Amino acid sequence: MSGKVVEKTVYLGTFAHSKSLKELEIAHDAAIFVDENGKIAAVERGVADEAAAKSFFPQLNWSESQEKPIQIVKSKEEQFFFPGFIDTHIHASQYPNAGIFGKSTLLDWLNTYTFPLEASLSALPTAQRVYARCIARTLSHGTTTAAYYATISVPATNLLADLCLAAGQRALIGRCCMDSLAPDYYRDAGPDESIADTKATIAHIASIDPTHALVKPIITPRFAPSCSRKLLTGLGELQKETGLPVQTHISENKREIDLVAELFPEAKSYAEVYDTHGLLGPKTVLAHAVHITDEERALIKKRGAGISHCPCRPGDGCERWVLAVGAGGGEAGAVV
Image 1 (tube, rainbow, N blue to C red):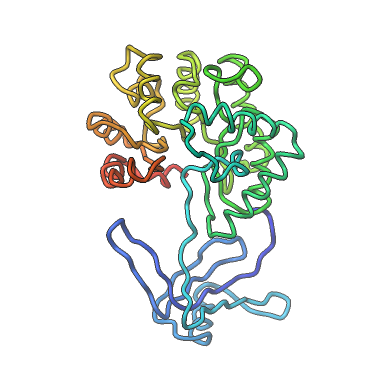
Image 2: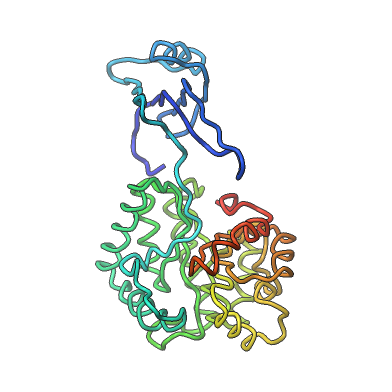
């Protein structure tokens, strides 16, 4: 939690949640008891009213007084409770560019719109404004957990972690690592510097949330074309050393895949680039995966990695969703 003092709370009414990809459960007359630390203390069914809810207080060693009231939040007849959304792939730094793409290609879009915007967030007042709006908007839509990409700036990335903690949003915070294929004004000075800066953000998050109860760092090579072999190797070693999760992109469009083949001719596939550098495992979240091959699906599943499937074009990606989900051996949310 963010350190805020909260009351014990009982949520009473109808709850809806997915037990699996194919199973939806709707529970009427149910109650969830949440303690003052924001932790679920109990889940009970057959709780028709407030009196029934209060009958469970002795079992929980809960006592109510004027100084320490227990809040009861009851859904109305047409309302229901549901779990918070988990966004497994979101660029907080690109929030002002939401909806901007047009007829541009991915690589042109990065150079024309994305890199200039992300570079501007090295100014902390700008980063404060953008990140605060992004967090507020995602929370307002029910996103209680998010895997964020920030920028290459350590101070701005650390600020994003601070803001998530203060807002009470559970978050994975990634400083973008990129020492290649980017403009001179927006790239890491080199692989050693990139890894050192990533370690600086890891240390900062440990200082503000030592147990990673709410905010946790995530190792973030932007995507293979923007990283040298030395950087990918170093990040793989850092993952092995720390056990932290990894997030990156894969196969968003065909030109990108061709570029990876040109830059890494020794690799049989895009997924193999990450695998050979120690970045493909059960704590890895691969974004997009629109054009992965059957062999890549098998490799991703074997390694237990997760896929955050974000098709760049509906006609290109939506019909492949079932294949992509089937490839992910682990659920992306499991890395949190």
